[in-house]
Structures are given as structure tokens and as C-alpha cells.
Length: 338
Image 1 (cartoon, one colour):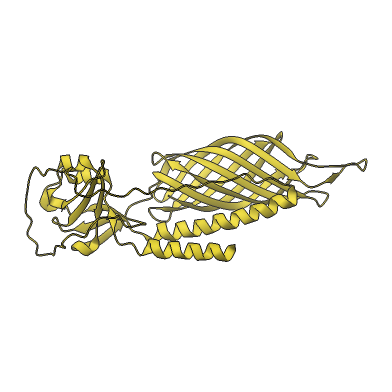
Image 2 (tube, one colour; image 1 turned 45 degrees about the vertical axis):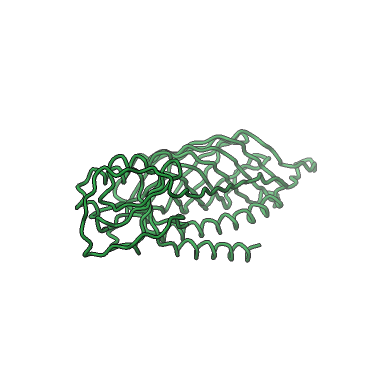
């Protein structure tokens, strides 16, 4: 299974890093439509695609190409229809005794780490920032109705920008110079994986420290606010040498309003269910009882991030969880991919 995961990750990385087409965000396209045509290519926000858009090639321009102004361009004709793509991902709950729970969690974490490495390499290597283009550089436009047209950057007006759902440019179709990367952008889907240490409560009431991990998947509708699903795993030996395994499945709200240069800070809070699977515990009278229990889980804490680039951030979490009638703590650090 691990070997297969590595092969899949390698193929995804290779395919993602080979794409040499870029999207212009629709908000940037609207902004460019207000810039004088001859100055339009000086500073264009572009995002390298993971998978190339299915648009035909356009005749390339050169540095000597003359800028031609053609006002009131009509768009929206049925030229080509762009294909639709989709996919899905599902996760299941892990159940079992203490030792079995730990083994299942490790298998899950190996797959989660493989996905993290794949996502981090693809997102970290593709360019997301600003480029300099020729004003006559071809821009491939796909409308909200799926129809397609292509026109020079200098010809795009407010109507064309409003009509377009996707705008694609290729470096091979004109002069191209990467300028600088954009700052950290959280808006959109996010994936994170963090590891460290946490306290966990035994069925007999004592708290102890052990390895702790959190895997998260979610969406940031704005730069500062995110809604995520969170899975927590932790384990340790209790005072009797038996295995204690703690898992939590929560929905989480993250708010990161503070930014000082490359440092970001905020808070998080969540709610869900906690499950403790603890192998047999021998009580004072010699009775052996299981330590399995489910309860409400409430979580919260502080978050800190350091920019790596536009899509990656080093994230630290100081968390508090209330479950099984006890307050528990964890300190985790890892990578967030946006």
C-alpha cells in the first residue's frame, strides 16, 4: 500500500509540475479591463494550472508585434464548449480497541502524509503571482455558458470580462516574464496536517502525554475565515501498561485576522464527537473493565502561521479540548496548503 501511494504521488507531482498554462482570475480580468490597453501587460496576476485547460492553440505574438486597438468586441458566440470535470473524496470513521485504533490511525496518517507531500509539492512549485505580458498576448476566454473565444489582452473590455468565467494564457504564445509571487492566499480549499504532543485522559481519571496528530480539510470563503472538518488522533500507555487511543471528529471555524509581515495569528474553535478506546484496565478489586467511551468534544485554541509562499504556510496550534468530562491540551505544528 505504501509503495502504491508513493507511485501515485510521483505521477501526480510529475503531471502537475509539467503544466505550462496559467489562469487570470476573473477579478483581475475586470481590473485589467479598466487599465489603458498599452499598459495592460505590465503587471498581470496569473496562477499556474495543475491541469491544462482544454483550449486550442493561438498564433503567438512577439516583442515586435504592433498593438492594435479594436473597441466593442462581441463575445458569447458558440465556438467551442469546454468540457466539465468532477471528482469526490470520502472518509470513514475508525473504530476499534486501543491497539487496533492506533494501528488504523497510523495507516490513515501514512496516506494523509502522502497526500500532503503531493499537494505541497504541486502547490509549492507552481507559480502564483505576477507576470509581464505583451498587450497583444492571446487570452483564451471560456464564458459562463461554456462557449469559447480568444482575443488579445488589449482588446478585453468590461463586457468581455463580465462574460468570461475562465481566462487562460500560455507563455508559449508571447513574451513572458515572471515578476514576483503573490503573498499567502487562503481563499479557496485548504488541506493541513499537524503533529506534536497532547494530553489524554484514561478511564481511571489520570492524564498523560502522548503523540498527537490532526488532519484537516476545508474551505476559506475569505482570506481570514475558514470552515474545516478536523480529525484528531492521539495515543499513549496508561498506568497499567494498556493502550489508550483517543480520536475526535469535529467541525472547526478558523479566524486569522492578525498579520505582521509573514507572521499571521488567530483562533479556532470546534465541536463534534470524541471516542476513547482503551484496552482492559484492572481495577483495585481485580476487576477488568474496558475504557471505551464516546462523548461530546469541544475544541479551541490559538493558531500561528509563517508564510512559505502564496499557497503554503507553516502552522502552529495550541489547543484545548473538553471531552470525557476532562480538559485536555495539545501543541501541534505542521503544514497548511491553500
